[in-house]
Image (tube, rainbow, N blue to C red; front, top):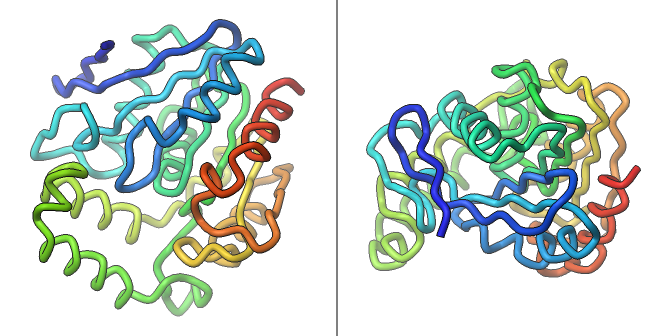
Length: 244
């Protein structure tokens, strides 16, 4: 097993398959790098280097008490890029992982990145507010938090109580609209029209409007978990985009 140590001493579990141009895959909440296995295999078999890692607090990575905000998570991504030597990389963020891509582009100036992909992403802003009417009501996030706290067995299996709640709060309440102008590389957005977790109007379509020159592919009738329900199509679209 391979681990990368971040600037604050957190150890992140990293899967590194294949050779060629690197593609860094950022998982969703409350999953792990394993969610990307089908796409990582397809990328590696197509001549690319697929790198996927468990976010701090998740999977096989360390569970520190702090660092569950997007600035810290973007710094973790920067440390993974540095440690793996993944220059000229494509960043692919699923769900809350899209936030890490967005914050890395603004906080680290997109260093070493040639292109970006947002899949079922929470970008640009999930919470329903007066200036974001298509967002998700706060009550839905409250229900998620209450469910996690009530089922500690499930939580322990996934990631641990504090990290899980902290990351859920981060993606629910972080506004990535100021980060949109930092996407200065070719960007692909993939989103299902039936996504109930990150409704397409508040996320995929809004991101496409906010990121200049981006391309949006809508999967008609598809739910949030495109990596499973549309595994082959998603793999194909990623390979074609990286190869362009």
